[in-house]
Length: 117
Image 1 (cartoon, rainbow, N blue to C red):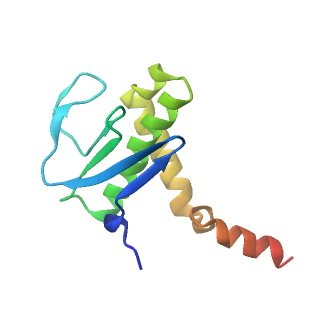
Image 2: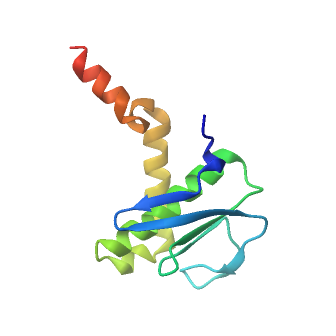
């Protein structure tokens, strides 16, 4: 069974990101602040970096956060895609809905429910 940290690729629409778990991650966030980062999305290099010393559930949430940057950039909303406050709020909401409703994380569970009626 694949664990979250064994994933190495993340497909977001037309881009396939290399998903890398790195020991340290520092740099400038899209909000212009410098310092330690939990994650980083390199849009043109098609790479997402996640700090590997984070708990796995925080790595999962951080990957959602970085994926949402990519989604908004690809649908033509770069101003929202680079707004850290917006991305953090939306990614927290998405992750909470998935965590509170396990069937939302597995499309096969939805198909099973639909077919059992």
